[in-house]
Length: 444
Image (cartoon, rainbow, N blue to C red; front, side, top):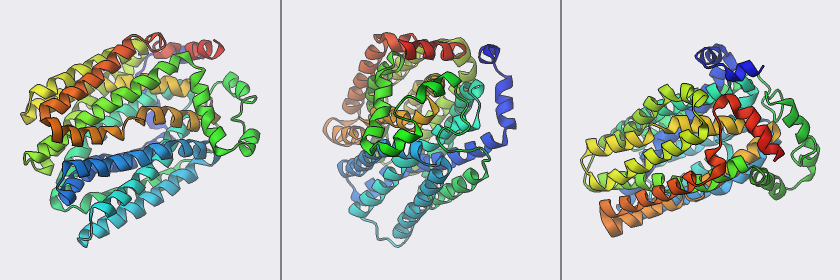
């Protein structure tokens, strides 16, 4: 069996595509991801159109982001308590209804600041509750020896979604403000159909391809079914944090993720606001999202090989340096091609970083704790996200293009310093050595 972990692909990706369950899982995960990509551009542009104020548009986005963050921990508890198939279906239904209501209100010309704020909040709460459920179900669909390749393949999928989402969202907005929300409702319906076609048992811990020692250790931990029945929601949610806090190999990722997400999120929103304020069309602004997708797509081509051969700590450090350098260019360029080139360059290393960190994470976390551990990590990574649109909106109003983007670059640079100085993050090995490293860290 160790040879399976040490064998460089390309054979593993082909094996993944032969798996019917994996293909349906990918469809169930991709459809709502594309919907989110459409709305990432559509909601800020719609808020600017409805309010006419960059600051108020930032408030709409920030309130939604706060709702998503607050829903993440309860979502993790739900993921570890209930059948993950049922949760995906419930989330898809909520997405269909909410996006449909938004589309109807826009078509009837009844939208205002408060309605948009409330409905965007509902969409984001739905996202926080159920978006991580499909990731937690992945080990039930793919065996442990293929998780690294599955995550790398998903990074390629994310690149295509990012590449397509921006231009499609901009074009749909140009056709009609309601159209992106109609498309989002349809995509959620597709997700519901796809998850029903998965044959694997998606209940927490059922059929998960994690190692036997982790499951044996877990039987004495608070995350077992008997204790789940007794424990309260707060205690169950805290178990994810407690597990992460015991892991020196993952503690450094928490602070770095929070800070770098603030810098990148604020920079992306600032670019959208700046282009809109100078009169660019929604379709043109969508090219910025497409450029991010190009960078991700290029990076995803090399990610499967890199994650097998290069230590994850090295990939993470190099990728963060690349992103910070790209953000440092943005304050000094205003032409759309230069802005798109800088954004694309900053994203090239992201697929390998994500494939390494998330792949290692899925190997290291016991199956029945995946929902809560994922939600804990997501909460810490997303903790600064509500500040990003506020920083972008008010920062752009106060300091303009160069000032707010220089601040974003400084935030990303601080994250690089923390990452390079963190021993636990630097020590993460290449994919063939993840199981051994995770076992040593658990025992330490």
